[in-house]
Amino acid sequence: MRRCLARPAAVIGLALLALLAVAIVFADLLAPYSPIMADPLHSLESPSSLHLLGTDVSGMDVLSRIIFATRINLLVGIVSVAGAFLVGVPIGLLTGFYRGFVSALVMRLFDFIQSFPVFVLGMALVSVLGQEIWNVALVLAVLFVPLFARLVRAEVLSLRERPFISAARCSGASDLAVMVRHLLPNALTPALVQLSISVGMAILLTAGLSFIGAGVRMPTPEWGLMVSSGAQQMILGVWWVSLFPGIAIVIAVLCFALLGDEMRRLLDPTRHRR
Amino acid sequence: MRIVLARVSLIPPQLFGVLLVTFMLVRLLPGDPALLMLGNMATPDAIASLRQRLGLDQGLWTQFVRYLGRVLHGDLGTSIFTSHPVVQDLIERAPATLELISYAMIVTVTAGVGLAVLSVIARGRSFDYVTRVYGLAAGALPDFWVGLLLIFFLYHVAGWAPAPFGRLDTYLTAPRAITGFYTLDSLLTGNWADLGSAAARLVLPVATISIVNTGAMMKMTQTVFAGVYDSAFIRHARASGLPQRRIIVIALKNSLPPIITTAGFLFGFLLGAAVLVETIFSWGGLGQYAVQAVINSDYPALQGFVMVAAVFVLLVYLVVDVLYELVDPRIRI
Image (cartoon, rainbow over all chains, first blue to last red; front, side, top):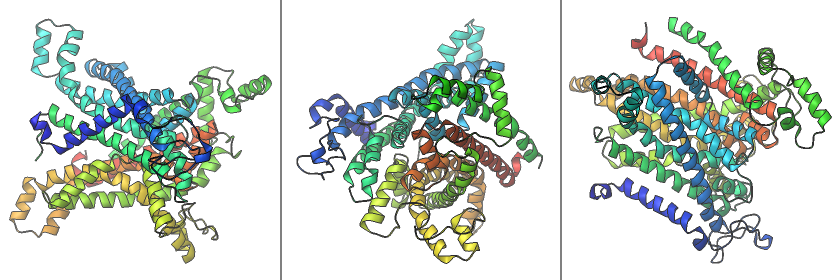
């Protein structure tokens, strides 16, 4: 614990995580207004004591929407990455362990998926599947599966020739036991580190997809959509509609990036940085 | 040279895979493509005739072969929104995007490598610390948001930047197309008004992309360059009394292979980033076309864009592999 506190990055990361957690759990208490209630009489009001972060085009309170959007943005980020992890890790384990025709085929499939720019493929898939928030989560999960599978597979490939694996085999362990009990715990570290960083990436991608209109629709509170709803006015000097949701995105992504960095240090005692 | 040939021979199977993905993108996903293309207001008759025209009443494999045949003949279908052939639309818009991401690429790689080298040399000093904070923060910045902030501060508040609408001031006509890059074309035709305007209009979008992506480039280069800079042969060079600048050049040369790989990856990635940045700056390139396609459910256009994006990435990786061979003699067979 004390070692942890000595690292400012870890402290900031945990503090931001706490902030996000509070916003998620106490959204109803914290938000001064309804996040989806339009009030055309008070549209585009600048920040004041009534509306701390101002109001958007349809008069919705920016602060309330930012607070409520935390739920959607983090949920999509976490669910999609968790899904990709749960599917990708077993695939990585299996393709690393059994190197047959099917394994090769799966890896080629991953090559194809990864040969498209992530955002482009994500945009196309969401648009074809239907522009709904759960489709965004599903698409991001599909796009992240190769990432986790590759990390685990690479570890398994280097571990499988090591003596402790041969020892396990000689003592009569089945394939399944070797994979789950001996390979999995040792092959998981890079994927775990990637977990947190990927949540940040997923949040950025979700926001980007919503920004171009390929994610959620109004009036759902979502950060990317909020930035986009203020984009037109930004040129005219109405800065608060887009500025604040953007800061929320930065906070969330930064939080998971910092935690990912810390996790790398904690899980990898051999690699001390200067 | 043999590596180049071996590498080029990999292109057809990769292309086949790309086409398979773009084909499945529209065909295998839930819902009837004919219904998707015509929208919910379509009459059953219209759907049936479109299904027949698209060959949807035939087996999936036949459909794929037909799709392959059409793509190989340069037919990517007709855009529902612009009602032009998709190929024509894409060719018209490609130079705008390429110009944007090429300049963004140059700035990002130069700034990223430059900052990395300086921070490694200034190790432990405040500059090193600043670059590390920037490297961390840059990865968390949404590019579309950075673009809007730049517009607000540099166009609205300070008034330094030109209006964020398109590639050229509205009263100017585009220079005669030679390369399709407005900056190069206006330079070649001596059209100075166009050159100034095109360059000024490039500043904000290029800055947007560079601010967001330089961080990743810099972090990668820092790791590689620091490794080389601390290695025995550099220490030997320093002990032999070579001047600092010469040492940096040598160390940089030896860090090139991973830098080239990262840069290549980045180039492909920027095509995705361009989608968002073009939307903000009304750039009129491929990215904005793709966004229009998404908003209007224009599936032939979307399919075409995805295919072009993947082919672009394949070509970039090909160039990367060839360059890699040139700078790293060890991988030659």
